[in-house]
Length: 225
Ligand code: CA
Image (cartoon, helix red, strand yellow):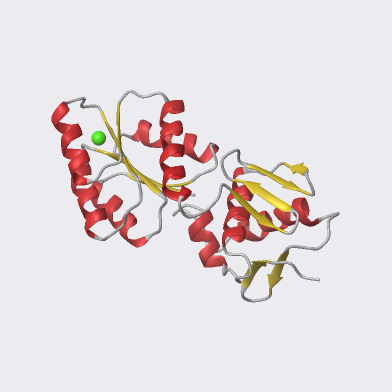
C-alpha cells in the first residue's frame, strides 16, 4: 500500500516517512503543496496525509485538487492548529480524518489502517491467496502450506502486488512505482535482488513454483505446472 505524505517540517516529515515505511507502507514525501498535489495526481496512492500550513499551496488546496480530479483516496489532515473552524473546513472539503500535532505515532498508524480497511472492505477480503500461499493483509503475515514465512516490508509489498495482479506480467517500471518510493534508482538491480529473496522464501522447497521471470518483460505470479 502506498501513502503520500505532504509535510514541510523536515523532522515531522522524516519521522512519518520512517515510521510508515517500517510499518510496511511505501511512502512518498513531498515538502510543499504543489509538489504534493502533483504527486497525488500523477501517481496512485491508497491514502494521503496532508499538513495544513504548507509552502506553495496549503493543505486545503491540495485536498481540493485531489477531489476535483476525482480521486477518492482517504485523506488525513495533520496540523498544529486545533481550531474548530479548521475541522469544519477540512471535513467540508472531503477530508476523512484530522489529527492535531503533536500526535502519537501509534495512534496515527491505527487511524491509517482503519481508513485503508474501510476503503477496501467492500471490494475485497483481508486475505490474498494463490495455491497454498496466503497473505493476511491486516496481520501482515504470509504462510505457505500453513507454515509461517517471515518477509521484510519490501518483500511483503512485492508479494502483495504480485498477488493482486496474479497472472499478469508486471514490468519492472510498474513494480518500481508501486513498491519503491520516488527516489528509486532505475539503474540499480534492487528489484532483481528483492525478487530473488522473495522467491527463495516462498518457492524453495514448495510445489508448484509461483513466481516466474519473463525474460525482458518482468515478473508474473501464477500456478505453473
Ligand atoms: Ca507546516
